[in-house]
Image (cartoon, rainbow, N blue to C red; front, side):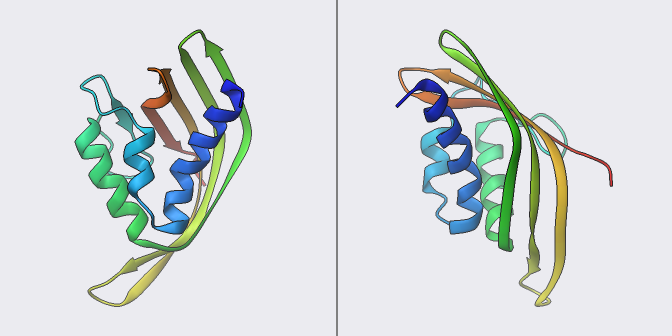
Length: 134
């Protein structure tokens, strides 16, 4: 499998966790390292480390039912053992509040940048998602 195919598969694995609720792959595709960082398109907006990112990703994915995503116009640039992936992301679903048994419809578009490193397998080392205003 080519590097480009492997990288695109990792990006899809990241979002498929939201659909399947199988969160284990999130740990396998992200680099557990002090150099890991992320920005999100939902609060909290500050730069986060690996542990905080993992906790928030898991919370987000288990809180959304009927989650769907679409990756639009992906661009993958590979520089030896580093890669930058940029795309637009459409996400829909229902955010479920288990305490009140109410849901809020989610429909948003974001700009996405993922940075991956090859050590020896490709792993996500930085994520930046920024919501596109309605």
